[in-house]
Image 1 (cartoon, rainbow, N blue to C red):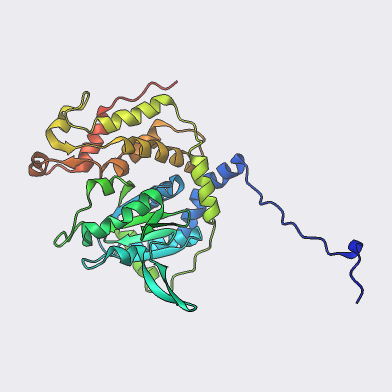
Image 2 (image 1 turned 90 degrees about the vertical axis):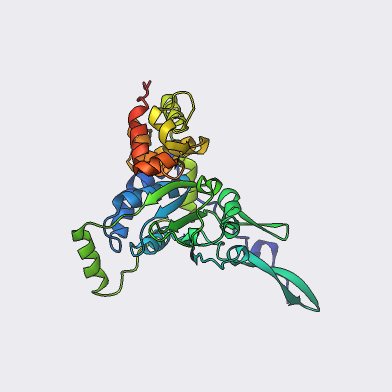
Length: 349
């Protein structure tokens, strides 16, 4: 057989480089994304617009959410639906008192490899992109702490070996505020890792009737994927580029500082009612969340209303009330509302 002449050799096919969207294109996708996502979610979720907005802001900003709400309010359905729209791998973990850390992160097992036996790491359910940690306060602190490294470092360490998690990685943990018997309250250090504490309340009667009508008429529709993981990572980068007036940054810092009892400038009601206030991460989350909220509203800059609108989900799990507030029946939501009123609006340039 004659060798193929050099001129007739098949040329190597070089794949074209991926098309990277411009900042303007990313901005347009974010600005139009809110309504597209709301329309798609509206096929299976009724109402809860504020809850959806807060979860989307956290997702686009790269933060985690703690969701507080009674059973039966479609928390799992909402999270699964968001995972479908963004084409992200979804996992759900039901936290129980007997759950072990390795049940979440994974464990090493001995397997036969040819003529030898080797230790192999078997990944746990935490290796997802959207993780629903259901009733996280039902499991002991040792198991709760298994999430800390994953939430902060986006990795899991087993037998001294680090296993990175697939990006983007997003944790939504739920708590039942009604049945507190046999629960283990989350430590302050772990609560602070959550960007928002989102509260889901009961629907109005008309919306609840629509839910009942939909769910008893046939199977739920299959949602369309509008984005993918690469889009979410680009959104994370773009959100941080949004400009913000230095005076608004100072406002976020002042708002967090005003929640600390005994600190200069703290209102009298804080010193009387608060045992522990918010740290620096609260101001960081306010600014980052404000940037994401601005983009979802179609703005390329942050305004004061963006920060004030997010003060409650950012601060409600970072402020610990004292016994005096408990005796008076004072709620943390009221403290946050009074804080927003007490901290003066900044003079913007």
